[in-house]
Length: 355
Image (cartoon, rainbow, N blue to C red; front, side):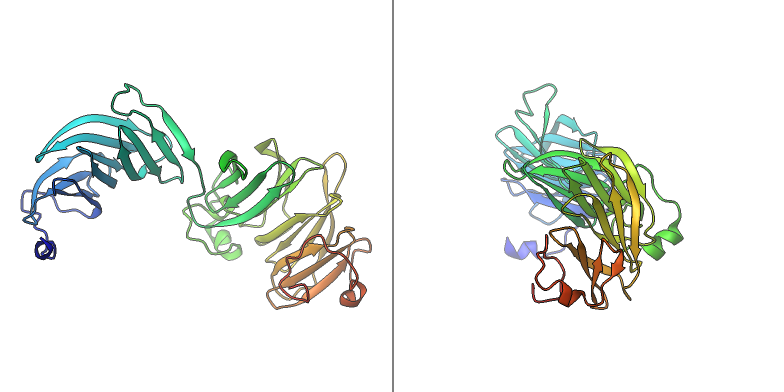
C-alpha cells in the first residue's frame, strides 16, 4: 500500500481536470479529493479516480469522511452530507450558511462542527435527525490580515481587539466567550493611490480605511476609540460600537498607538506622520485639538502618560526619546532629568531604564 501511495494518481479522460483543494480517507480505504470545480473525486487503491460527484456550485473548501458519511463544504456557503458505503453515495442533506463559507469540517455521533472563513466556528447538534438544524456559533474571531489593537476594559472582565478584517471585537476573558462586535468603517475607500502612500502594508482583502491599528477605552466618557490604517481616529459609543461620536482627522498617516490620560481629560495618539496629537475631552464628551507636537524625526511607535497626566514621553523609529509637558504645551528638552522621580501610568516605550 505504501508503494501505491507514491504513485501518481490518474484522473482519467472522463473526469474534468481541476485544482485539488482538500483530501481525506474513509474507514474503507477510499480516498476523496475536493476540487475547485465543486466536484468530489473518488479514488480507489489503484490510484485512479473511479467517480466524480458534483457536490457544490462553487469550489470545495473542506472535506471529511467518517462514520459512513462523506461531508464537504464549498464556496457556495453549503455543507453537503452524503452517505458513503462500498463506493456508493447518496445525498442526505444540505446545511446552508448565511455569513461565510466552510473551511474545515468534523462530524461525530450526529453532531457537525464547521470552521468558517470569517473566523467563526459553528456547531449543529443532531444534524441528521433534525429537519432544520440550529446553528450554534461557539467561537468568533478575527480572520483577515493581522490583529493590531488590544485593550482591557477595567472592572468588566472584558478585552477589546481590532485588526485588518474591519472588525472591532470584545471578549469576556473570565468565561472565554465572545461578547459583541462592531465595524471599523461602513464603506470602502476608492482612493487607491492615497491608501498605498499613507498606510501600513497588509495582506488583508480590506482597504486601509477598514483596517484598524489601535484601540482604547474611556470609562469616564464611556467611549471607544479606533485608529484606522489611514490615520482617521473614530470615537464610538462603548454601548454601540457602530455609533460614531466624533471623527478626528488631523493625522495624515496611520496611528500606531492611542491612549487616554489617567485623568481622562485628554486623548493622545501617535502617528506615522511623526507627530503626537493631544485632544482635550470635555465632561460632555466633546473633543478639541489641544496640541500637535511635531518634534520627532521619524514615526512615533509608543508613548506613556505620567500618572498625574502632566507629561507624555515618546519614542520613534529613529530611536529618539522625547518628553512633552502637557500643561505648558511644550517639548521639554530636559525631560529625562525633570521626570526622573515621576511615576508613569504605563511602561510601553522601548527605550530607557524602565525596560
